[in-house]
Structure formats: C-alpha cells, structure tokens
Image (cartoon, rainbow, N blue to C red; front, side, top):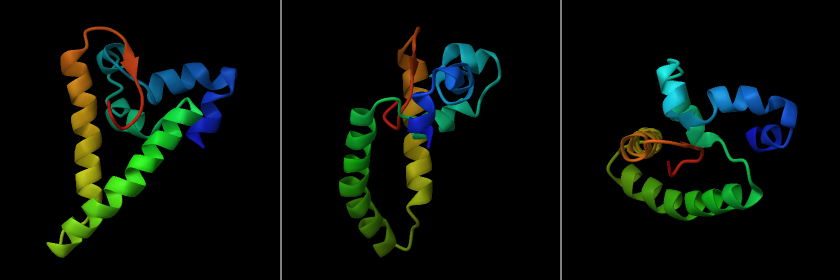
Length: 101
C-alpha cells in the first residue's frame, strides 16, 4: 500500500514527513520515521529486491530463531532500527527509505 501511495504526487509531503528517515524528521520529533521508513518503498525494483531478500533470508532466520524458541519479529524490528540509526550516524545529509537504512 505504501508503494502505491508513493506513486501519488499529492501524498508525497505526508509520506516524506512520516515514512522517510531524515535528520530533519528527527529534529521535528518524528521519531516514528525510524521504523516507518523501513517499510516504505518508492520504486518497484526496491520493493522487489527487499521482498526477495526477506523471503530468502527471512526463511533461514525464522528457522534458526524458532529452533531456539525465539520469534522473528524482534529480530526484524532490531534490524530496521539498526539500519535506520546507522544511516543517521553515518549520513549528515539526505534521507532514506527501506529496511536497509
């Protein structure tokens, strides 16, 4: 649904405020963008590559984690947070969307 929303120009300001990670959004106290940016994709190729990686890596990760009695969601949440915080730490300018930060 977010991918489709990015294709609608009128929604761009809203999406940039809440579903895009940037230092500006953090300064504006939009801390939710740290996580919401991870599920946001503006191009079909970006979405497809992340889905491909999620299916292939996620299946292996889920199997290994469930063998130890651990759920996948904290791992995914941690990965999204780590990617976003790494972007903020390493990039002085710009913005990003997607799980990889």
